[in-house]
Length: 310
Image (cartoon, rainbow, N blue to C red; front, side, top):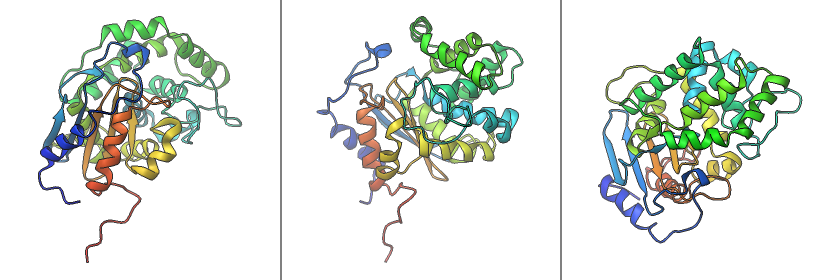
């Protein structure tokens, strides 16, 4: 369908979802307003279209994994990162305590084992300086100095035994460049950074442009890093629902248990959604439906031929 008024179109997309009440919020975000929802699109020039609660702030959670993976590549090089982390879809839950059989490496950077390893590969040299470097990148991509959601951080550190176990497993059986506790602490702070849907869309636009901030053209990630990030987002970003996502949506994306989805259409735009109800895979229910609507309506699916021009 041709879309002439994008803002009105996005508002209509949200209106069609107000009666969708499937899913539940993650326990960490049990107090979230379940009726809040948002969608935003940012093009490579920095123009913004938005609808719903697009300025509401919430923890970035696992969406940060994709960006930190790119930063790790820029810090130590793709070869070194991939010596520590594979790039294969796992088909497993994001927090499974496992390494790939044979390689003894995390399956990919989008599951917790790979994300903890990627976090540890960002050069510091100290744990605090490593976090500050991550915080600096995410703040630059968002367009403001991001703050930590202290409640989210405290809750997740108090229940971090599983991530501690994963970090110790990687340290014992593979390679983790830093102490497990420091890595888990920094990773938890990384995931607790608060963003809005518009800011997530700006981050997606930065990836879509090959590492240039939309509007300003300032480079914050290399084109090589963005290529790796987009590839892994496409194949692994939606956890064990990645196959369905590639087929029905066809856009590189990463979800987070806070309710967000961050998407990037190379050379076109960044797209983000927010709605806290999650499905059985940990992906936002309404967010998936928004992307499933936008992909065909705006001709965004990367693996399908464009509309007939004849």
